[in-house]
Length: 159
Image 1 (cartoon, rainbow, N blue to C red):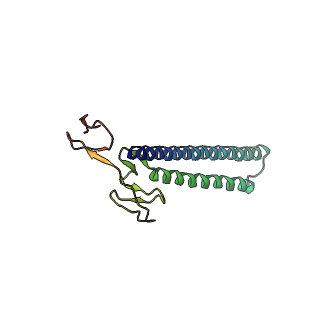
Image 2: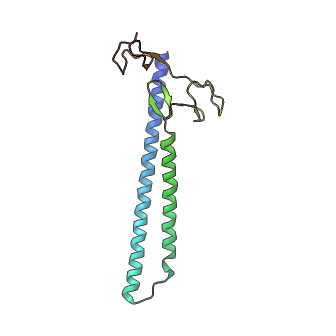
Image 3: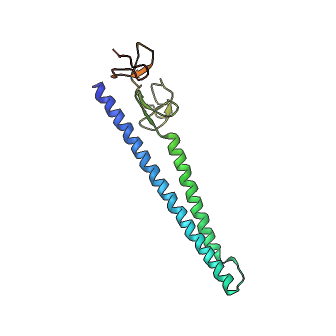
């Protein structure tokens, strides 16, 4: 049963990473769309001022609404870039010893709180945390995931 539980955990981890990648791609696409909208609005400003120049008119504040619209697009991009940064910082990474974040902390499956490796219960919601399962390579002492037959560091056989 432990083997299937590990497979389930790995599959969940991969699924979470896939969802994070999809969300990142969506945000990057939205950012590109906003940048394209800004380019179009900048083009409109240029056309507006050029036409005024060609007709000999004084250039005034008629483009204020376009400028406000550009500012709005810049604000949206900033929000999405912050969200992208937050997603990258919180994204779990798969390891052969459990679901760990980039600092090798355990991530609670209920609330997403980072907990130090070895913590038995989530410090945020109290959920019982499953500790990564591992053994030690008899040849080099490297910690390897349970169920592996050979060490990834030295190639020694795991008994």
